Figure: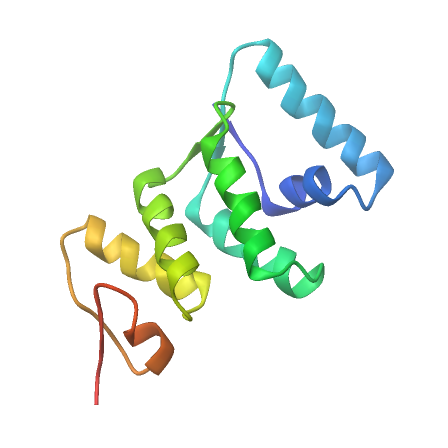
Length: 132
């Protein structure tokens, strides 16, 4: 199984560079045609959210929709997919950053709670607690 870097996913999703979009599309479709899945590390998920939001102006709802679609794609396999699905749920219903939701979800998956934080918004995520 091959893995994808953030920049390949970004080019495929936003299509801002025709040549790189074509390359990303060829790779992804070749894997699909061969029945192979592509692996997405957690770090790519975190960076992808940031790039879409900060670099391309995606709103929270658009980021959630995009990440949800990627997570439900049969062609992609995510590291700690269950934790990332929980993170999206936490992100959808709260004010914390996506990265904080991922941290809390990974801690919960590991059975290690609470996630102690000095970040007031992050402390409101289920499974996190404010350290004072």
